[in-house]
Image (cartoon, rainbow, N blue to C red; front, side, top):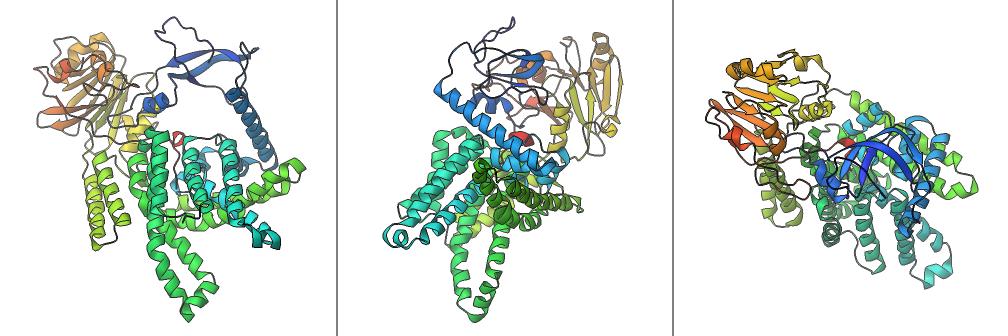
Length: 603
C-alpha cells in the first residue's frame, strides 16, 4: 500500500485486506485507487473463539473492510521492486492457468482442478464445498502435505524410471539422487504456482527434508525427519503452532510413521508365507495398507477436527478409501501432465481427464453427505482436553515399551473431559448487539438488534453443536422484541433484556437479571449490566449460571495485552464487582473455531 487517507485514523496500517465484488478484483501488481470502509480485525466472537486479529497481525494486515464504489487503475507512483515483479509474474501465470482449466472443464470440476493446481478455491459452489468438508475430503482442496508429496513422488518416480532406461546413466550415476533433485525442483515450482500459502510452505519444508535425506543417503521417513520439519516450521512461523493445519498434519504424519515402523515388519513377515505372497500378488497388501493409513490418519486428527471445527466425519474413512486412489493415480498425474503440455497446446484432453476423476470425487462426497448421520457435531471444549489428547498421541507413537499404552488412557481421559465441558447459559457479542440465551430445551435462543452480524450467530451455533442456520425462525421463538428492545427467558425462567433505547432501562433494570445494551446503562440499574463500557474492554462475554448469580468469562480478560489486541481500560470491573450483581470473573477456556475459507486442513 502506497498511501492511505482517513480522518479518523490515528495510525495508518501498513497493509489492509478489502473485499470486492466478484469479478472486479484487479490483477496482481496493479496500482489502484478506491474508497473503502475499514474496520479493525475481527476479535473473537465468543470467549475461547478463534482470534482472527492474531492471524492478520502475523500477516502484517492492520485493517479489513470492503470497497465502496469502483476501483480505478492508475499509473505506478514508484517503480516495482523485484519481489513485486515476481508476484506479478506468478499471479499472471496462475490467472492464465486458471482461465485455461475452467474454459476446458466447466463447473465445480474445473473449479476444483484449478484449486489443485493454482490454489484458487473461490469458484467452488457452496453445496460441493460443504460436501467436501462433511465427507472429510476437504483436505484435497487445500494444497498441503498430500499434494506436495504426490507431486514430488510422481516426478521422482518418472525421472528415475526414464533415467533407468539409459544403461549408461543407470550404471554410472546415482540416478536416485538426480530424481530427488528433480522432485525438489518440481515441488518448489508447485509451491510458487499455488500461491505459497502457509500450509503449502509447511508441506514444502517437510517434502524438502525428505528429498534432501534421499540425496544424502539418509532414511527419509523417520521420526527424526518429522522432528526436524516441525522445528523448521516453528523457527520460520512460530504462530503456526496454534493453527489446525499444523496440528492435524503433524499428528497424522506422526501416527502414519509410527504405524509404518511397527506395521512394516508384520507385513513383510506375512508376505513370506505362500498365502501372504498370493495376497500381495493380488494387490491385497496395498489395499490393506491404504485402509490402515486412512484409519490411522483419521483417528489421529479426530480430536483436532473436533476442537477446531466442532465436527467429526463418521464416514471419513469410507470417503477417503473411495476417492483418494482416484485422486492419487488419476487426477493429480493428469494435472501434472497437463501443465507440461500447456506450452505445446496439447493440454485440453488431459484437463478433461482430470475433470472426470474429480467428478468421481464430487460424487463420492455428495453420496457420503447424504448418508444418515454424516455430520457429527461436537460441542466446543477447552484446550485442556486437546493438550491431554496430544500427550496421549505422543506417548502412543513415540514409546516402544508397554508404557506407551498409557497414551490410550490419556486419550480416553481427554475425550471424557471434552464431553463433560459445560456450555455457557448466556453469550453476548463483542458489540452488544447479540445475546444468546440457553432455553429450557437446552438450545440457544438469540436476541438481536438491527445490523447484528449473522456470522457471530453461525459461530455460536457451531460451537453449540447446533445444526440450525442463523436465519432459522426457531432462534427467536423464546424472545419478544419491540422498538425499545428484546426480552427472553433463561432455562430457569429468569428474564434477560436487550435494551436498545434509553426508555427501556427503567422497566428492564427492575425486572431482568441481566441487561445488555449498546449504550451506557444508568448507574442505578439493579441487574447485571453488560453495556458499552463493559464490552468495549472485554469483547464478547459468556455467562454461566451459578446459584443466584453468574460467572462471567470475557474473551479478553483484564490484563490481556497482545500486539494484536492491546489492553483496554478495565471498564468491565464495574459490572463484575457491582454490589447489585453476583458475577465473578475467571480466565477463559480457549478453543478455536476458524472459518472454513481461513483454514488449511492438512494431512
